[in-house]
View 1: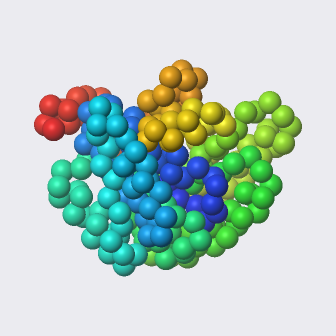
View 2 (view 1 turned 45 degrees about the horizontal axis):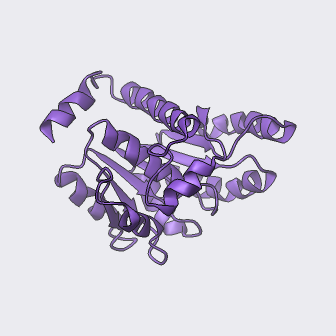
View 3 (view 1 turned 90 degrees about the vertical axis):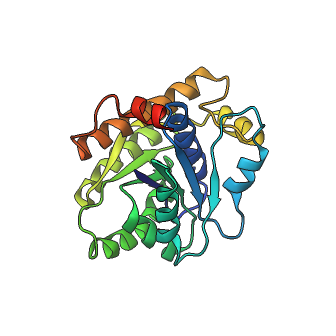
Length: 233
């Protein structure tokens, strides 16, 4: 399973979400890795280096080149990784294009702000161009840094429903603007692994919703598939 987390705007939580997904699925016994597509900053590669030796192992591989991304995915799949999380990079349309083409599920993080909604229009242009080559793309919006207590947040969440006409649906699950994400990152951890139970529950809810989506995309996926993977690996 290849899950891509991408958006052409920075600061929406792509790396945070990618790492939390990897932590969750690794904890379930699924052999998981992350591909860091940021050729300049290598943010998630640096995060992996900050992880303590006692922490759960989450391999992070740098993307070789933009053109070689599909080959990178194939290589890691052949190495036995059942879950490959692609941590997208902002501002590089070519990476977004290849990411959309090769993923099984596309996650698009967005924060509850008018600026993010406006910038999302640029991503939609790229998304529509890619759909010429691949019509059916399971794509979902992930509302990040969301508290739901003010009118602006509620208005943005309602506005996300409008993107259904593009075939992009908002997930039920949302992620709050939790300190646990920032504190965890400092030590090479994730909110899923941190001591904040509310943050952990939000991540768990998001991942469980993704598991529902995966099962709907693959009706033959058994409820015990994760257990079998744990035994095999």
